[in-house]
Image 1: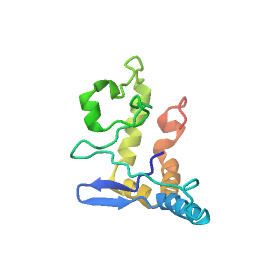
Image 2: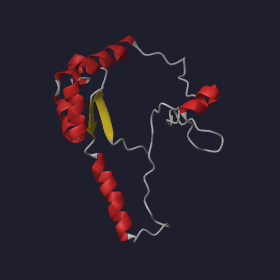
Image 3: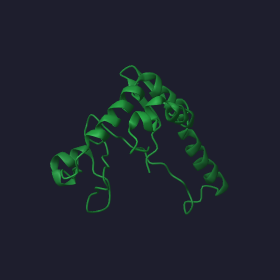
Image 4: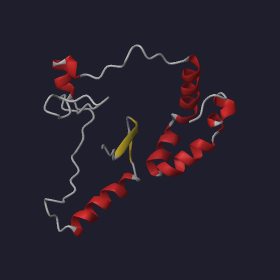
Length: 144
């Protein structure tokens, strides 16, 4: 499982994701309880999503290398079979596309992203309460 530690809101602004601090604190606490016994140790492996030298890890759709590890950007460039491809048979309905657009217009902005980074649960509660998420606005047949 990946635990993002920060989010880049703009080229000049990167914010820490505060809720993830709980996960890392729990790992440290468990290691302390287990006296760092390697048999029970909780380790967090750094995850580079993108990297200028192509070492960023790409894990989408369960796609892995034959040895079970996650491919890097460079390895996918060299071997396109490692790339995740979307099933072209799956078509997005116009209704779903409209819903996604409505949500993106209300949600994808600096203030909302900052709110998620500061407190994901409070931001989620506020988002669910927004008018873009009512059945009337999204269409009676859709539920989120």
